[in-house]
Image (cartoon, rainbow, N blue to C red; front, top):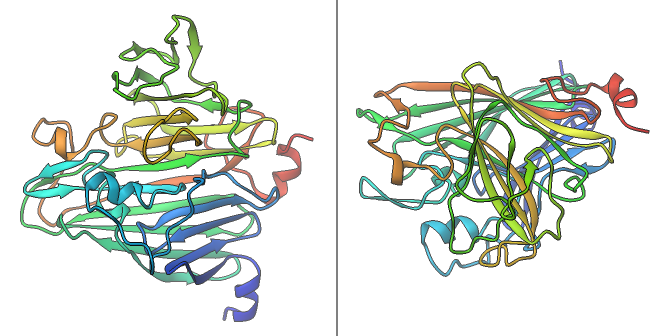
Length: 366
């Protein structure tokens, strides 16, 4: 039998509470703490490496709106997401990263699961392991999304076991991805990206473009041109005062596992993520270095997002439906996949290995 007192304060454990009118759940062990914002998309609002007391996720200079007092001015697909976008990690489903009508329903940026309230239940809990099920049913699209989060004591890694279900009698396309964004103090010019092999492309030209990367490039390696025509290695990270913002995409090679990391040798640790390449064959990168001049960032934010997706960058139901690009779920069909992510050594390229409690003193740079 689990000792209730011990399981509440030691080893793997869960706490639930209210914050500014939002329901919040925190899951942790001796090495990591992960916090989930139930009231809004089951966003991951904290992923903290406890030995260093550093949360690696980006947090906006805007605070989380008080759910009991904040009244949105518009209900547009762009604004409904960005009014509550204050950092962290969002899930994008089922309409992807576009705003526009699809089959008479207006699509929200990153899909409606990113703004809906979710439910949760504890599957198992002991000092050695905890598993919690989070789930939501869409309102505008007939889908269910389930995310099981599991954590073992002594390991600096977390697993997501996710399942999407088509609740309709129709074959339906879907756009699906994850949007974790990283910020200071973890993010800095010292960081190195471990990027997968594949075909690289930079984003199209934009009216609000302030790029460091020349738009509309293609490359079979992570070396592209800057706007000045110089070579730049995409594995390097620009500084906060660069005054730029960019996107690039990697279409993973068929033999490449889904894997990416951002490592900070100055701090002595990194963040790594592994996923099923068949489910998410693209990796998007979004970097803002005080260079997004408009709503909602206003030239004052520094962040870098690494986003596994099932479609090309900027894609979704609004612009890709019916083009043979998006996967399809048959009536009543389920699709399951697994993410693993956590903290890794800063000293070597990430190859899927995460730190354990007995390795912390070895992996950390002194």
